[in-house]
Length: 112
Image (cartoon, rainbow, N blue to C red; front, side, top):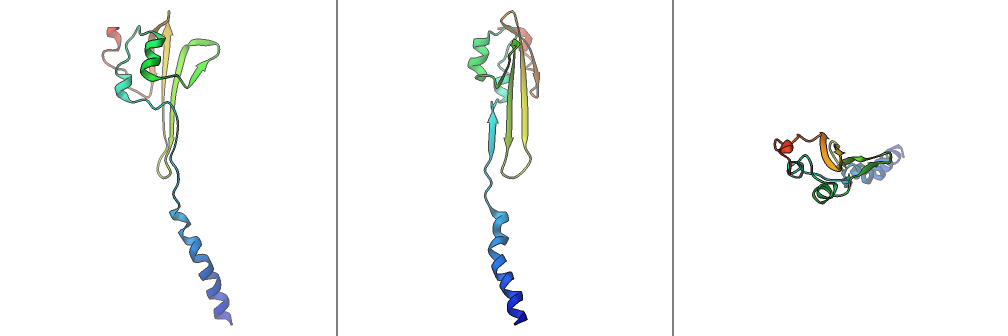
């Protein structure tokens, strides 16, 4: 009788042991930007040119229309999350500065 009470819970728990093998979905959010896109940025580009190259910014400052923020967040089903940010500042309707997690292109200050 005791053997049955020990074996039955073990047999019932075996299907639950495979739950660690459940597929987890990758979750991307925001603007996916590649370094080759950032490498095409030049000081003095218009907002329209930047928007054509990078798409719509993720965040616009309600008090400062000259600051655009592009953010990307990726949570894989398994593994480490990835988060990148690109901040653009416009001066007199032309691209002035670029900062964030991407290297500034060497040709940035050569203008358009």
